[in-house]
Length: 316
Ligand SMILES: NC(=O)C1=CN([C@@H]2O[C@H](COP(=O)(O)OP(=O)(O)OC[C@H]3O[C@@H](n4cnc5c(N)ncnc54)[C@H](O)[C@@H]3O)[C@@H](O)[C@H]2O)C=CC1
Ligand SMILES: CC(=O)C(=O)O
Image (cartoon, rainbow, N blue to C red; front, side, top):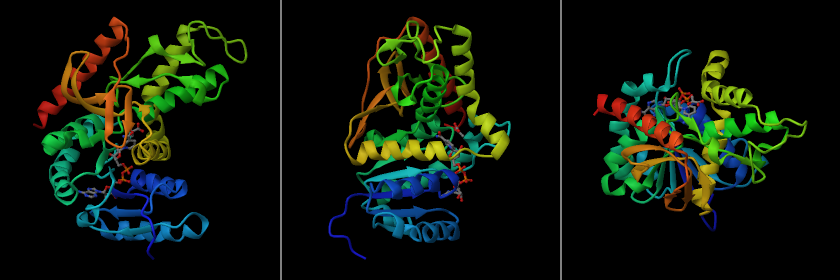
C-alpha cells in the first residue's frame, strides 16, 4: 500500500514489552504513517508486526513491518527499548554491564543507517545508556535523548493528583536527576493550578502535609520495584510516555518534559545525560530550562549526576 503523503516514519529497536507498548500506542494516535520493528529475535518482531497489522481496520492506515537496521534510513524517530530488564529486586544500575555491551554494537549500526532522525533511548539504566549513545554519536550527540524521568514525573503527578483529588494533568511537578534511586523532586516549583503546594488546599480540604508528600516521593521512587515484584515488568505507562516524546518531536510541539540529555554545565554538571525539564521538539532536546532551584535541590541533582558518572566510569 502506498500512502500519498508520508506523515512520519518511526523505528522501534527492541520489540519486547516496552517497545511494543509504545508501538501499540503509536498506531492508535495516528502519528506516523510507517513503523518498522527491529529485534535480535526476528521472529518476535515479525509476530508483533502481524498482530499490530491485524488491528489496522480499527485505526488509521499505516505501514507496519519487521525489518533490519537498513530500514531505519529514512526514520524521523527511533525508539530503543532493546536489552535486559530488571528481575525482582534488581536496580536499574544492575543492568548496566549487559545493556552497555548491547549499545556499543547497536548504536553504530543505527547511526550508520540513519543520519538525521531523533534517537530516543528507553533501555535501562537509561541515563548512562543515553550518555554512551551520545558519546558514540559524537558531533550528532544532540540527536540522542533518553526517556529519563518522564515516567517518574508521571507517577509523581498521578500520586499528587490522587492525594489532592485533582486531575494529574493539573499538577505541575517534576522529578529530575537519575531515572532511578537517586532521583529528586523539585518541590520548590511544584504547584497545582499555579498555587504552590504549601498553599494549596485539595478537593477534600487537604492542606500542607510534609509526611504525606514525603511518602508520595518514596512511592514514586519505588513504583518500578513494586510493579516488577507483582508482574515482572513495567510497560504501559512508559509506552505512553514514549508516545508523548514521539508526539513532541514529530509535531514539533516544544513540550516541556523531563527527558534525559547530555549536560553542558547546567547546575555545574557536564558530560553525563540526566533529566531536567527540557523543551522537546523536532530537534529533540532543544533547550534544558534554567529554573530557580533551591540550593538543596541543586545539591541533590549534583549528587545524582556524580553517582551516574561513577557508574559510567565502570563501563568506559
Ligand atoms: N526508561 C524507562 O522508564 C523504562 C525502561 N525500561 C527498560 O526497557 C528495556 C526493555 O524492557 P522490556 O521491554 O520489558 O524487556 P523485554 O525483555 O520484554 O524486551 C527486550 C527486547 O530487546 C530485544 N533485544 C535484546 N538484545 C537486542 C539487540 N542487541 N538488538 C535488538 N533487540 C534486542 C529482546 O529480544 C527483547 O525482545 C529494559 O532495559 C527495561 O529496564 C522499562 C520500563 C520503563
Ligand atoms: C523499569 C523502570 O525503569 C520503571 O518502571 O521505572
